[in-house]
Image (cartoon, rainbow, N blue to C red):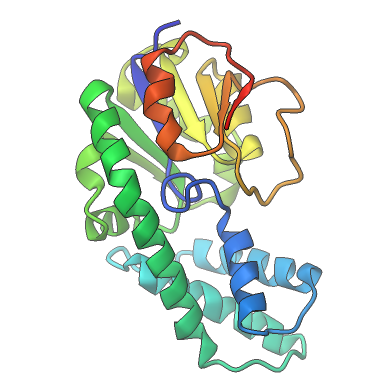
Length: 243
């Protein structure tokens, strides 16, 4: 079926080109010789996500750099409470490196977003921290989206509600909408459940999925810049990864 509108995930899809922020931060911790095993880091990452989702830390006008500093600080606090010795001066250094990574990625993504938005209405769908519009404005990409659907509840992004809202904002039938995201569990499965066509950006997920094991996504890409060409000839299912 011909696509008429796009539901596009933000975090991990367009700001990192498919790399999960958990994976990126784990690599940064290792780069800066923060000694701990991955299971300890995973717990610290989960703790920081829950803390930032509480609504008491992130302010509506916070930039992404602010988010990173808060997130890493929460991780350090959790690890320090667990007995790890940490150099808190590394927080700013790690946050700056991650912010620069996002800026570089988004500079490349702007051309793609401009191309897509000239052909399709795009609704951005994301689980974030209540400041997504401020982040989009700071990165100068808000203009590419017809609307933004943001939830601050991590659980709600794993069900269909946020994608149902996105479909409503686009104003088309779900079958006429293409959902694009990096998370198989939180983007592909729920959007497909409500009837959307789907494109999985499969790069470096935080989940234990290496292939489209359930055969649910209509197409799979390995780089965000492949999306415009894919949609130009959209006639799903493709299923074979575009690499």
